[in-house]
Image (cartoon, rainbow, N blue to C red; front, top):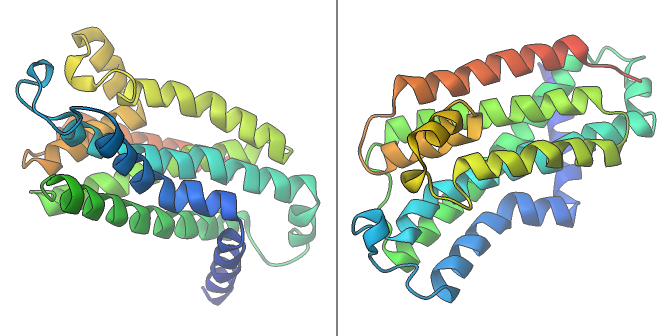
Length: 247
């Protein structure tokens, strides 16, 4: 436990020294939310397409999901790829550091950043655009934890397989952008067809958006969405540990 905590502190300091990772992982969601609400005309006005709802309300959970996905699929895999590329993992192999400890440290660091980022985005949405705070906070918390677990597990799996920082970034991006589509970044899930929405529900990020949206507005998330996130988290994390390579 002491070794894992020490490794986690080290990884946290390294993350904080990377301005690009710090911006996109911590600040980008709230910046995007403010930009959408302030720069797009009518974004915070009721519209018929959303049955009188506002785009800013619809996009708030999407932006939280985007923040988790950015951390898990854009910043996490290149870190592990770089460690493998420059022989850092090979040197760690000669120590008692088990791969589970290294992966756990990465999960903790990225999880803490995700929590702070989400808190900033929720506070910004409420203060600037009168978006209500999550009305079912316990379900919202559970949905957020499962969302982070599923997306980060996929990021760890990618990081366990790639050999370089560049390949980690490329593979992460190849997963990231399709997931954003199914999460409703370009087409809100509320106006997707039934078939497309079902496919979206089977992706971890699509289920993330739906579960966060449901709990945000006082509805209990469906067992399908919660189960999909839990299944992705369990399977991807097990595969990450199974296929992790030091070199």
